[in-house]
Image 1 (tube, helix red, strand yellow):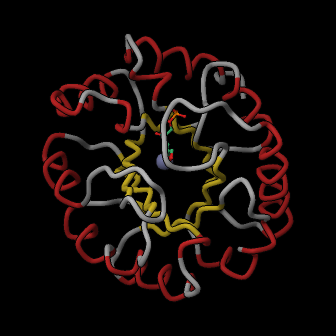
Image 2 (cartoon, rainbow, N blue to C red):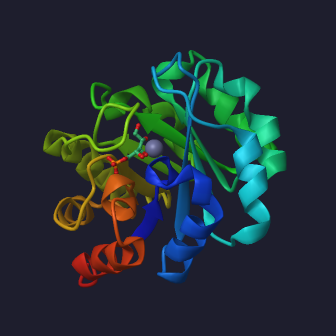
Length: 217
Ligand code: DX5
Ligand code: ZN
């Protein structure tokens, strides 16, 4: 299981330091939540922050787009140094085109589903993607409670991988702590995002606790 601390809950005045803390602690990914105040009501940051952090970190920059018109963000994010770009199926009628655009830009492509969206909505694009993100809360804010019923979709995707030999990562995002990460790992998740749990206090210790919680998986 790879750990992806979400900078949404980091100290924005100390971003460089917070990123370095979780990197030293052994996190593999850095989760970057890009929100536009339309697809979700919250507003965060964009490619400028990705570009600013890029020289200081070797972590996999995992950019989660919670925006309308995701196609408008791809080229700038690719240039800024994104390693993975995730697009919500709920945000575009042209998911195949946007995922193809991400791959053409040389970036790993991810499709994201909200808690209310079934796996059947993304079946046709599963052969295209490098990663699938199953939201385990409704997107928009950190610090919300984990929705355990979303894990049946993680199980369904894990079964699809076994049936087809597909290699994509299965990521979970929202309400992850040292207990819920175990449930997610058991269901077949391979990347776990954690925001408020990690950056609430003692981020290095929290990354270690997450890794320890799934060490036997
Ligand atoms: C929510 C974001 C998450 C958020 C998770 O819309 O996509 O990445 O940072 O925060 P926690 O881990 O606090 O639920
Ligand atoms: Zn996210």
